[in-house]
Image (cartoon, rainbow, N blue to C red):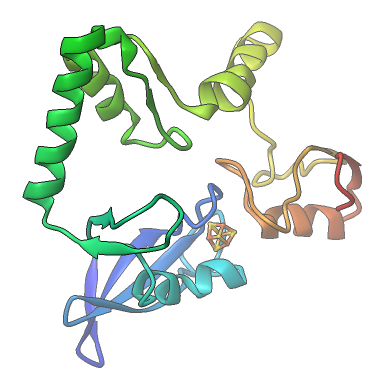
Length: 210
Ligand code: SF4
């Protein structure tokens, strides 16, 4: 959905600065993100946003944000970088991959990535096309996949905290998780705060004081 507001186009979207997923209204002016605010029609966040999400235009528009390839100049650690074109960087990477594959075989190449979001199948496909099975992302080892597997084995399905029905939680166990900082998929900070305000007991198990 888009509407006109001060010549900015307003789009309904979802904040992904953490995994929580607050509903947002995004204002874009002349191709530039200018404002993000909570979407009151979101059934989960009901117009609320945290300070991180509200400041996402600053993240998107920050002059230090990396928006093009850089190549190191001189010694590693020297802090010297030069801007190069996408064609040049892709050519360099392809040449190195070809070299490693010819010298040591495709399985000498391992691909790693950050948390598994919707792009992760591209990494898997790329590894497959290269001919290496060596691909990893952290969610498979320590985070999301173990959580799903244990849920499936214990409950027969993937369960998440029920913050949104008529039966709010009476006790919430925060195991290595601080909802003030970030939320997993399906849980946003304000829903946790509202449950605690209604009397839920919070128990934190964390190596850090939270
Ligand atoms: S809680 Fe997460 S999804 Fe919601 S506004 Fe903050 S960063 Fe964005």
